[in-house]
Length: 173
Image 1 (spheres, rainbow, N blue to C red):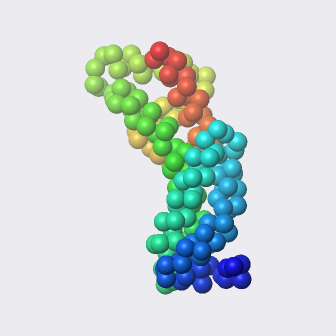
Image 2: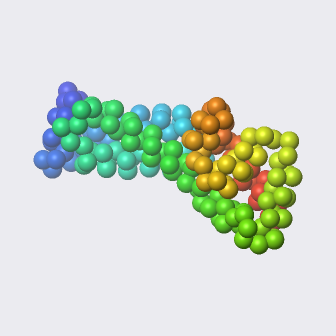
């Protein structure tokens, strides 16, 4: 029914309370959400969670978008979608590191210093892992800043961070 409408017309109809226009926007952008989630995650069992997050982001963007923005709705949504999916993807790893960072705070007590040495011994042959432990965990440098500082692709740092978390879980257990 709304196939001949552009995004701005659909947004107007949605703000006017037309549920069919809202459904059309979801149908129109569902492929983009799935492609973006697959590109960010690769292939994983959490893909459906990311797709659902993408749909929630679309709903938020539909209601927050303003015609006065100097950007198309498509571009606005794509930027918001990428940010949200990356944030969701890294959130669980970040939660693990918050706990670890509290255990690794330098100067807290002797047992924490022993933990730091044990972690560094485990990763002594891996300069990227040591950089993540030193810079990201102890200095609170973000993954993006770490990737930029060491001139390493962001995705490679994220993957290494996953490996470190798994290895640290084994050490702690």
